Length: 304
Image 1: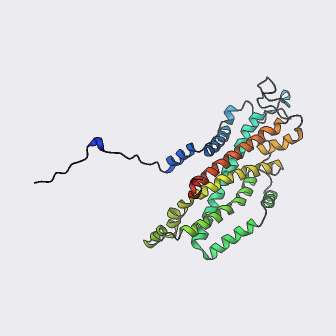
Image 2: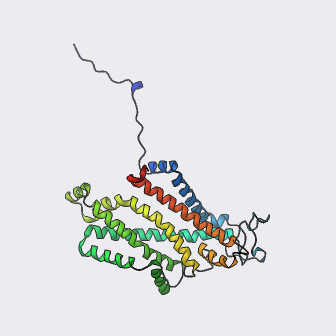
Image 3: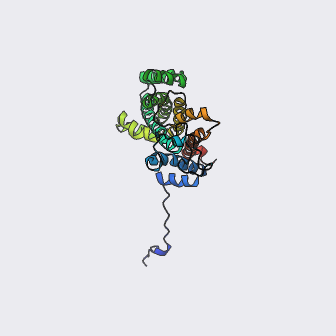
């Protein structure tokens, strides 16, 4: 008597769909989150406004016209020549808000990328090497943190003078320490994990350990901090420009528009309402997106 083996029929074969991983899972979670989608939409609109400013803007941001002085926005006047009104020099506010997004977002991304890169590398080196290098880097961090940001920014701007790159240097110099502290702490934790110890055992050098095993496993923490720091950069760039220490005219910026409009709050409140609203919506969007990223990457907060 021979034993017969039966193969499962094709009709009874069950296929288990693969669960999404990586970016696909992240995008799926974003679509399901009201907070995340709201933040992504607001940030996306700000980026779209900055990229499309040369195409969408009805006027040049520095063009002046007598008939446009204190022109009322479209909901107060039937004219559509100045959709969001005109300022004290007859410049179109909509065009200046759109072009102002370019300056604010450019310095926002540049400062965040440079500060994150420099701070992450120094923090990883300090946490991985230890000893004198760790002490030197972290004492530098402690020294800088003891200096108020506004004082540090004023010192840098006094030396370099006001302007786009001066603001960039001041903000990048102020923010790199946050990444250095974060990455150092994460490095001290990750370097003792089994997979790092195993890689060290089979002969991986320190450079490979940091670039292939340590830094990639803390990218989510760096991403969350970078997202939240973007809001900080936009606010302080606008604050420094408002005080006359930041980006100088004729470059249109949201902070300078607020500074100009404060003298005409009664006659033309729209001179401050629209650039101020642009700052608020962009910062709120970035904060919502950053909160969603933090909740997504932190398992202890994911189900709250």
